[in-house]
Image (cartoon, rainbow, N blue to C red; front, side):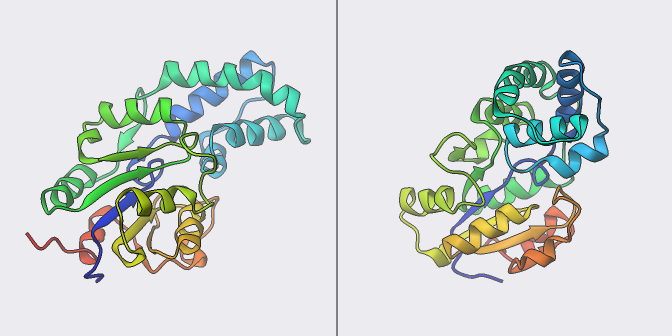
Length: 225
């Protein structure tokens, strides 16, 4: 257990919300509009985690069987964004115990943030749709700052904004990008096994703790109130 933790940063996709069903429909509809071969939900689960553009790049590369030219990707992105906007919140679901655990941490006085690579314009509607937006005093999307995870900049931003020591901030996520960002920022991390990590064991990224369920976080940062 970490006794000095005062603030916790959470990833969104694959950590708080299973958003792949929405992303899959949006990707499939975008590919169809572009006249490209479709994909499966299982494939999308291995493609998410590096932002919307990388998701579409991977989907198009799979459909074409070759790397995608940037000009083609630039044309495809508005199409994908439109379909994702249309499908946002329709098929996604909050993971088990997320609301209860966030409520517990919030009531105990922990400062909570979302640090995601998802564009901010999609992040806030999702948080509101599932009734968890009020738990977070800071929300950083993949386009909020100049760099996103695995770069440490978003976590460094939190440390600066909240005037925290590195020992006082914890990163919780399901992807190696979350763990790499935490390591680069010099803070502790918890890796979740149930999310999206490109088919890899999250433990291979070397988080300080591994949890199979969201509720297990409370074993590491027990509320004192």
